[in-house]
Image (tube, rainbow, N blue to C red):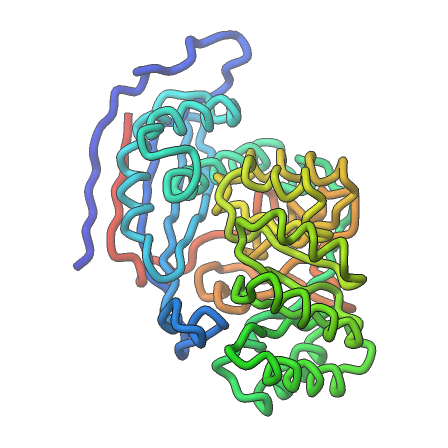
Length: 393
């Protein structure tokens, strides 16, 4: 049942006192919860090993922030399987803290929001809910400047290498995966990632061999979704060396930084991880130990763009490569602002949510020229919305 409410907040409660540099104030914040249904259930190794059920939908938290000056910012967070209603509930509780604030003070507002919900921590669901607000504020700031987000941050490139994931799930038989690979290459995609991590590693090897045979020298990645223990990862990683992979993703538990470091030191094939971590501090451990060659932060999971930029700075010092997880509409901007080699992940799942499309050609995704992130919610996104609440001053 669709729920819609409008509540009032004290516009100046806890707000920064006005100064000559305060040019605008936040006047309204709207949070919404929507569920995007997938065309069919999909499975990765977490399903085949019995840890999770097939994925049938993705929950999205939208934050829309309006200012007295007439600007509008859109932010997005998400959760797969459980968690969507929790994100929405936390966002509703803390949203009022933004009313009356200068929307340009993004770092200070991140701190204000994290302390408003500090009792439930500074990572996980709390920061994922905050991410929608943080992303909306950055969207607004770039729109104020009349610049694409990448240009506001400072772009190192105007396009980023991109690879496709959505055609390589384990729920698809190998014949379908091969068809999907051909279609992706024909669309201008620059790389293919397929899922591995099945209970029988030999079945994984057969799938990788079949895909490599089709692709030739075309860039190929594999993703084990945390399903190998250390001995299996070490053994299979050595066997996979022959396939000249761009990387092996999440070969171990996401929090096993020491194991990743040992594997990365042992293999010629690069190791990638980080998508399941939900704070900048958790990424610091991977970076400190040289545990990965490709760091894979997810802006909605780590608390938004403000925290993502901290991860980028830390990773840059180690000359790591960057491959953000999911949400290509945002991550193409962030990857373009990274000085070292970077990739973005192409998922066509999210396209119904937004009115705009991204341009892909010659293996690269172009940074859109539109101000801000360059996306707006579609009528379909509104139709999938099950609850919304507006907080106004």
